[in-house]
Image 1 (cartoon, one colour):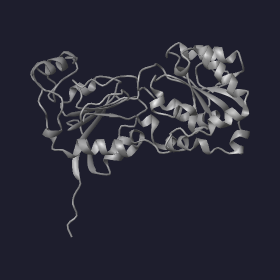
Image 2 (tube, helix red, strand yellow):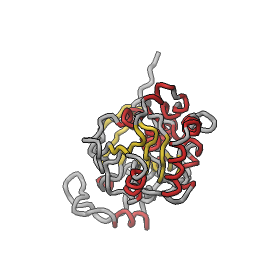
Image 3 (cartoon, rainbow, N blue to C red):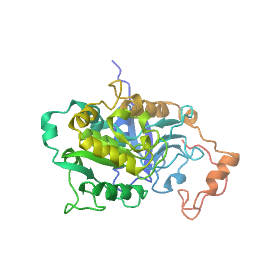
Image 4 (tube, one colour):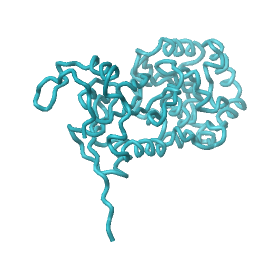
Length: 324
């Protein structure tokens, strides 16, 4: 019996956060199920993120991924994973690894809390933030809510518990509420913050994506956009804190109204997207224009002191061509 050999694809990761493992990550794990991978400096597929411009050196199929509040530039990429609430033929998938995978299942089951879970909640509210450069409202909520009761800050920013917590989920699970404020407020930009709070069986106090109610059951958390200002939102938190039956009712509300994890959050959806990209013949997988104004748009964004060919010579300003 003949055994069909896996197709070999040449890939490259660049412009990712320094903590990202370029050889062992969720993308390679999904691809390895279907392809034999060759990590190459002459790649057919370039997986890149927001932490640089090295991806412009490579002319293969570019696939953009962001965990930050950055929209994909489809003049520069063929395909993209992002947060934006958009549809673009077969080129875009709204998907973030931050809000899928290991913590999504316990988050989806948070309404199945036990009396033991409630007994652990000796704290009022947690605040785990390490980046103090986000929208100022993220600092404002900490100080305003702290006027009512102590908010335990376990991140690097505004830390008031003697050091950064090692286990965020365990720390959050010991509180009734979790402040889950994003760095910014853009439609579709939903990160792990609210999922972590759900997974810890707390009630998230949320600000960020104005369309968050399209992602999660609005009855399962306190949403800034239901009130429009911090004072009214905090008044609601205080009301819930002082009403055990109301607190239990909200905690018992599933985060997905039909009880099922939506396809947009499933890793299998991202796997199918990647398989679609890499199963096509290379020339057919190309989506971005390599000529005329779009080529000029790309060339104008290159740093010509850095973009060099294999011989070390600076690339000429010519139309870009798909390399195999």
